[in-house]
Length: 503
Ligand code: CMP
Ligand code: MG
Ligand code: ZN
Image 1 (cartoon, helix red, strand yellow):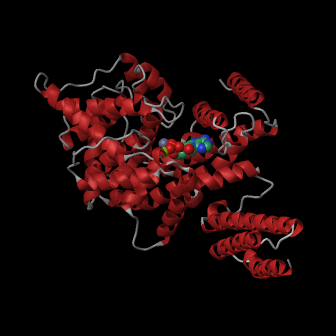
Image 2 (tube, rainbow, N blue to C red):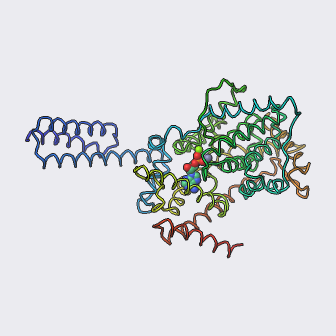
């Protein structure tokens, strides 16, 4: 008995040293040592119950310390979360932020099937090609017929307030297909890359089928259409489209459209012809995995200070990632609807977990989840830093382009760099497509030139809306949220009340 106490005490002495430091790895080793030691004692039968209990409690406290230390370490190295005040953010929200948006903990939580699979996307491309071959025999280029209501909703495609839900209704639940087709047309991608129209349409339809497979309230084709339009808005209004070449623009639109496509892929031998496109798309889609969020933000932040300049693929990834989490920066009506859809998706998962007798994942218990609090946390620690990095990065890239263009005598388009010439081409095409009146009524002639880029209002608009949304959640949070029914009623009432006073 005496010997067992000494063994543990020895461990205890060495362990506490490590509890203060950050040597998580060593702490884990110690913990393993303590547990092994306990097993040995049990095997020898030289332990009394009181000692055993004490030692197990001690092991539990070490485990807890390791957990806390590890969490803190993750949050410290990925320094965005480290200044969360423990009393400012409820522990559930904090745990959720840490487990979802950092690499290690997010990874352990995620089932492998939850990741988008590139192979299945290739499968969808293949399906598109196949259908195209079938159709080529009987048809020439088949365009996409736009219902009148679709044309009306697409008029706002260049706006931050674009209502993707309205497009989805107007198109009979085909918002993704129309979004893809419209942007491929506007950016002239169909001509530049000789994409057969029927192939593009078949591909978009195959994507829609994949997105609809699990009937998700949030991760469905509307979300894909939303992210695709948001990427377009960002490229257009930051002027980044003048910096990107056409292959990169294609990669951006394509990656946005497919980024959450989930489908169990079957074997296929289709090879994507352009390797560069494949690599860019893979990098961008992977960057939307939230477990890499803090690392991504940190890397890009650091690289902004570097003289070598900006990594193109990383910038493009940031645009897609920002678009993916952009709804808290959209008008309250859109943001609220997306939040409720996402919460419903989380709660459905929670229902399944309860059914299986599993513990709830963070934010998945419909009876206790603090929706408003979690949104404030999400905005504070995820959305704001991402958009601030986005505006800083785009400013660093675009301001020199604007200066270069304004120095040129003849037109704002004439510049020495080849990327600007590509920008000229794309801007030209965008202008022509709108002048044709297919998506605009002609009364308004948008200026897509670099000279028209207004980075200040791009930024201020975002900052203002995010702030307003945060205030609304704070109002709701202050009313308290304990059970979901009351909570959702509160939210709906508040929504209606607000709609009344702010038509
Ligand atoms: P996904 O679209 O795959 O990638 C971005 C993720 O951010 C998204 O899934 C959600 O898991 C998460 N997310 C987006 N919006 C919110 C929100 N308002 N609150 C909490 N999580 C969000
Ligand atoms: Mg995703
Ligand atoms: Zn997404």
